[in-house]
Length: 271
Image (cartoon, rainbow, N blue to C red):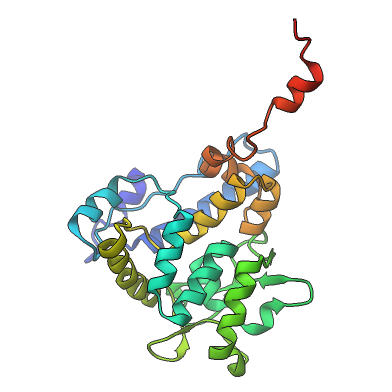
């Protein structure tokens, strides 16, 4: 943390949180490789990310709440429905697909219709478009990031609804509804997202969270419903289950409300 904080010295403007995250990714991946080769016993950066606390364009009360919230703060089913109702059709399709696939923003904006395998019922995730790429599509940074994500019914519904808007273009699935062109990266998504969240706060009292929480929402829904952690980990593009247990562990104890009772029925002597 001290080293990351020192990177701003002698710079005209602070390094962005996105760039800080990219720097940490290099170290995290190196440690993950060392862990795989049994050179170290643990990856201390496995579930750690340093970022600055940055204010956002929302009401002051929500900014204060945002800065003190835990990194993982998923949306409830009711909040999801309220947010989707406030979005225009294309953004609604984008957000619904995000909630039900857990894809990263950079992966979502890079998707093309050819990435959808309708017969197999999966979306092939192998590329991303980051802010630093300046509108260019790149392959994902890790092998685990290249994956096939199962298309659950709500995600399929979002795609079918999006067909009338972009299917004829045979290229990017999700477009910026303001320009009619594919999203250029994170920045424009944030602009539209903040407008929706301000409305959601005013009408429904929904506190502000950033768009990445759609990914956290997916993970919490899957784990709370009792889906296998290993499966969820692979769907999200994690190298192993470490991230799932460390970041989303609090949703797992309730995943099976009957946990432990089978053992009681089998082994309890009832004395």
